[in-house]
Image (cartoon, rainbow, N blue to C red):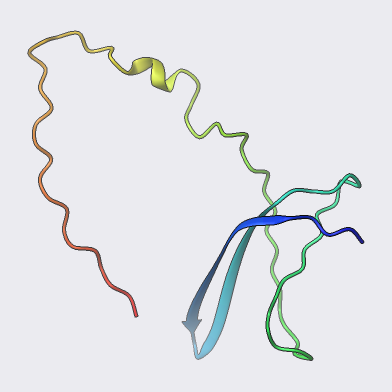
Length: 95
């Protein structure tokens, strides 16, 4: 089974009801066989896990609707002013 390069992974752990769930997000590319082969490092040999997989196609770099950036500069009224936005509150710290 050929392994496919994985990039942009992140790991998030959360606890609910005394159980710890680790969410690992991979950005990967399917192989020439049209299959996505995953190797998920769990660090605990001979342990049974419940695994949930969600597969969704990654957008081809089109995060904005078509024509969105055509709007920039469309306000030609010289009296139009963007008022000060103020300060952001300090970020919330998590343990």
